[in-house]
Image 1 (cartoon, rainbow, N blue to C red):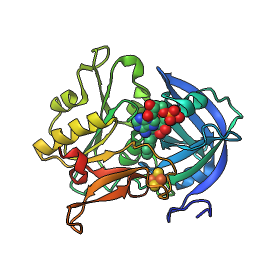
Image 2 (cartoon, rainbow, N blue to C red):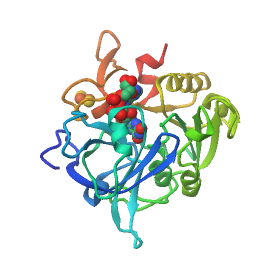
Image 3 (tube, protein in one colour):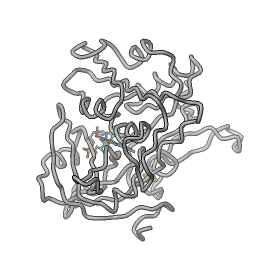
Image 4 (cartoon, helix red, strand yellow):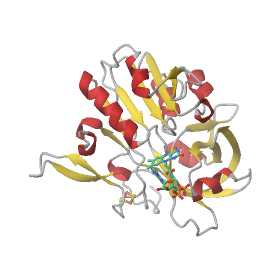
Amino acid sequence: MDSSCAQQRPCAHKSASVLANDQLAERTWRLRLHGPEVAALAQPGQFFMVRIAGRTDPLLGRPFALYDTVLDGQGGLVGLEIVHLVVGKMTTLLSGLKPGDSVEIWGPLGMRFPAVPDHVARVTLVAGGIGQTPFLAYSRELLGGRGFAGKSAQKVVDKVELVYGARRESLLAGLDAFVQAGACVLPCTEDGSLGLKGRVTDGLDTLEKPEWIVACGPEPMLYAVARWARERGVPCQVSLETPMACGLGICFSCVVKVASSEQASGWDYQRVCIDGPTFDAANLIDLQK
Ligand SMILES: Cc1cc2nc3c(=O)[nH]c(=O)nc-3n(C[C@H](O)[C@H](O)[C@H](O)COP(=O)(O)OP(=O)(O)OC[C@H]3O[C@@H](n4cnc5c(N)ncnc54)[C@H](O)[C@@H]3O)c2cc1C
Ligand code: FES
């Protein structure tokens, strides 16, 4: 473990040079970073804190999910990719980076996606907004297309389906990458410009009953998906995008209420950066209302 990381898991704090920075969709960019050591540690579901090298504004790093690892022509690990939506200061700066520029990156942070139970043959991923980002690496892993963190590629399930919602087609990013990874993609747009007209829960209604749902996206979407799953008795994991200051478990800016039999209240706080970012929806108090 690098001494700069306070988590008791392997992670590193490195300067990483930009290999490429490509616009994938409206306000959405894919940043390809050189960093074989950091990429070698990363597993689907984990995230990285990113800062612009040499700048103190913005002062705090920002969390971004592992989107994919980058391989060279011989299959050797070269680095990693993050995909981000431009919403504010940091993401605006990231979208302007050029090959050869540097960022500071620390991670991987947080827990990987939880293991899929042995009896599950089909995983249903549900993404809204920029919530598709943790799911490309995960799709590759589940379908045996790529091993992560030194593990060999081994198929975990027979089928991965991605229900991916956005307001309009121009905001859907990387659909071809998911298809190429082997996922069955169901786009849902609120204006009907691509795929099903409606929300991700409308998309879920069209599928065979899911066996295992993993969702990532804005809170109202997670709330709706968790309720949809609860009403049908489908296990549902949610990956949270809670704002974070340190990413390392120190500042407590990222806490959520999680069910706990050890507390008289029935719940306790957990840190999304250390204990998450993925939680069983049934244990998240704020998703039960
Ligand atoms: C574990 C994790 C993984 C993430 N992965 C990705 C990813 O792969 N791609 C991606 O685009 N984003 C991701 N996010 C969200 C991302 O961290 C924020 O969008 C980013 O910090 C915004 O930084 P900024 O400086 O551009 O915006 P700021 O200038 O800090 O904020 C601009 C506006 O966005 C709002 N905002 C900032 N952060 C969040 C947030 N986390 N949730 C909701 N509103 C927010 C602010 O309140 C403000 O209104 C992730 C968040 C977490 C916790
Ligand atoms: S972000 Fe600081 S404790 Fe989680």
